[in-house]
Length: 353
Image 1: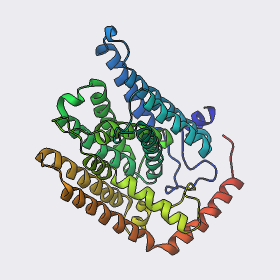
Image 2: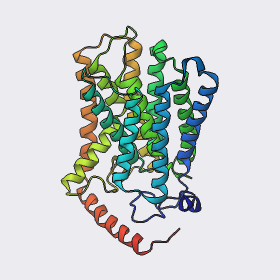
Image 3: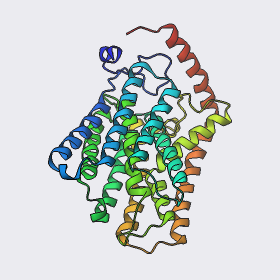
């Protein structure tokens, strides 16, 4: 970690990485998220844990999964780890969750539940990492998702009484709001991969507990309602990641190579400032979360029409965003060329830290 400590985790000093911001800034913001989480776990262990009942295996699995995800992000900030290593650690984090009882229970088949859980955890960790491409975007979207989960936990009452889960949500939510002050454009610091990887495993885990496995107060489950809640809460990460992968494949590019072709970038190409882009993305996320809250608060009897209505809402946003990105094909080509030149230039001017 000597390299990381010497440059204080500053981004854009590293080799061949294409980033939106040109300034060198510390990427230490993400450390606070993990520290806050560890403090919550420590308080929970001291105050709430009953030795007579032994260790809570599920919470221990969450602690281990979060820990390896954070350490992988920390390593990536220092050494730009290879994709295969990132995937292996993300897979390991998902297996920790599954083996300790945190997994999606949508199907009657446990194998399908395990496979869906692995896909979900890995997908969200990568999606949140990809979303961290402009000031305040990831912090805003993540705050919206956590706020939604907190509201769901409130309405579920006794079903979500574990103090560790609730205090973790509240504390990380507070840490995000505090970080947002320094990450709002023009930002003073970034969260780094340590922050985005931690948020990825954090959001995917709590989404499993409160969204994928959502239960009515009566204890009943409605799979279409659960899937709808997940799609609405994660509307920005899902649409942005899907759109980026599709566009890169259509251009003959690898979807795993960075570029300035995300939803946020295309909104900027339309003339919006970075601040306005953050407001637009945040507004979409908040409105979508508001739909979930309205459904829960109104206690409506869920049926096919509500599912179709929410699906139509999602599709409209998807094609609106996708249309925006396809209107800038020449801009994408230009960025592809300039990104290649930037990588070559950075490699030639590489400085060992």
